[in-house]
Amino acid sequence: MAYMDVPPAQTGNARTIVLLHGKNFYGSYWEDTIKHLTAAGYRVIVPDQIGFGKSGKPDVDYSFDLLAANTLKLLNHLGVAGVAVVGHSMGGMLAVRFARNYPERTTHLVLENPLGLEDYRFKVPAQATEKIYQNELSQTDPAKIRDFLRRYVVEWKPEVYERFVEVRTRITLSGEYERWVLASALTYQMIYREPVRHEFGLIRVPALLVIGQEDRTTLGRGLVSEDVLKTLGQYPRLGREAAKDIPGASLIELTRVGHIPHLEVPDKFHNALLEFLNRKN
Image (cartoon, rainbow, N blue to C red):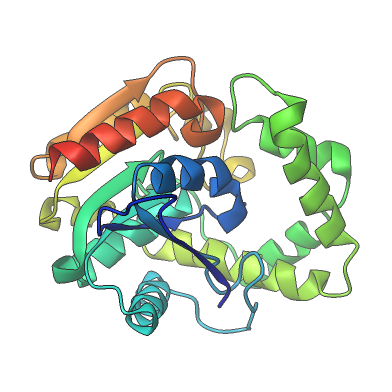
């Protein structure tokens, strides 16, 4: 399990933050967030979960409980007690499960456009892992990869986002591509089969939701009709409903922002994050 452990830039505040990446990303896309947090005195730990980034990609039964337990093992290995947990996209689902399983180790919970604000099983049909695998295996065209990533953001800025197209394209050229694809298929099943939406009322730590209002990300986009698709991924509504269900949660709604606020509007995201963390001291 690969990870970064970045110390405070100057005098630390004795506080630690864990950043949890989304399904189609990896720890390094938190680069700017790491700089902001370490400059503010935080120690920042950024794992690549197994199945992602530079970590191993085993053929195992992936679950959010497993990834949460691995994250806890990493913190124990590093001698870290309480942490603020920030999760983006799939990482938001993992952050919810971590906070639920280990509330005594979680000081704050921040959910940035998390997946799992709805239970996809209600509208998206189940798929065999082999079918998901075969479909993913064919996604090797850089133009299609770009189109897929473009849906995440309101404005495509090549200087910011093109590197993710390059990385994804290079993965398709690797001798390990089939292993990567299998891990991707298995973690799709994890997201589909393990909804966290029904756990929001059980969260017992200070929580913040940061929701880009133009986000329409959903699981199973190509598996439902256009009419059904219009009812999925409605983040403005989903964010407000989640904020009501998570006890004492704060909600920040970002206009003209899609699925990745920390890349799309970094100053707004980082200011909101630090204000929340400082307010809850």
